Image (cartoon, rainbow, N blue to C red; front, side, top):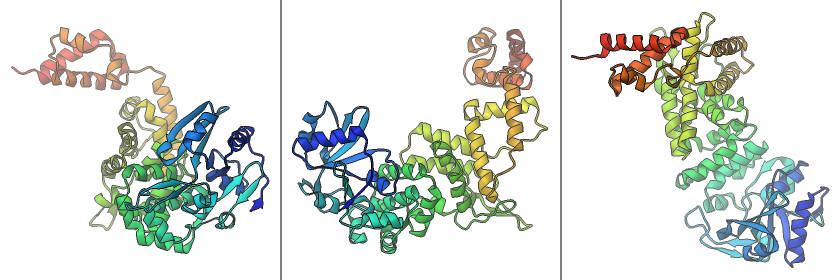
Length: 454
């Protein structure tokens, strides 16, 4: 044990004191301990105790049974959350996912022994400011090293998700993975096939929220995880690109992902997946030029398949694939105001900034330096100017609706839909035409000349 220097929050000390005064042990564990060893302030607090959930609940006014089956509750105290888990010993993992049985224990060291990595097998007594570190986790934190606790193969055979957790910790912390641990990851990467996609998604979301997701994806490539979980992305490795591109499609994609702010997960996923269709559509012209015609369409389709596989919400999938589908726009100053309006209509006003963020990241990852920002700046200015004209951009902004067209003798159904689309295209070209009588005249003429059948 070693003394540490750290000023713990008053609320945590009060929660700790209440548990100890009731006759139980209580320690800070998990990521908070790593942060303190790294001389950083923790963002959340996990506690471990020999008190059972049933013994904890009477001690506090608000206790949420977040994982009571596994001995975990969340104590809400003075506006803070403290996830608190009972010391436990785990039985064998027959399904390589969950322990066959869990037994509560009074021994902290027995609880720490069941954990996955040495950096996660430390605890702190916040009152005495004592670090309990039976497996050398502090030294590994100082070395910035991820090391499996005990035999790496045994740890990963117990729960295959730990293989991906090692990747996640590396991406989050910027740590390297100890060689024996990495070797075991390679040998057992195939066992990730037995892990549910929901659990894979949860780890991936944490990787994507790290400062450098590319660290994680490089590790997945090195350890053989990538072709098992994301074959579409693995297919991009070694696919060279011409022109301004200096990286293959895989490296370009993960650098593009890094270049998007981590606070915007949908755009990060779009950045990661925006070119995964390139290996599928790649062709070489008779002149020897490599081209990827319409790759954005294939990329959007493959990205949708991947996100559905990971059980992401449909709304999230649609947002990501929409950005991928439209990332290949090429603005020129010669665009008319009508062309700008059509662009905004196609992309959606609500998606413009996300699309521009994706384009900027794409530029960064093309040559490894900041792209020329002038074209996007000019397009932003043009869009602002056009939107200031209050020109209609959607069917609901037209001066006529379905009832008006019905009264004018245009039948409902696909015919009316075609007429409305024609009217919208007309006012996108010339907003001054968005006047009821003008549109009704246009509608009747279009219907009579193009759609009416005898």
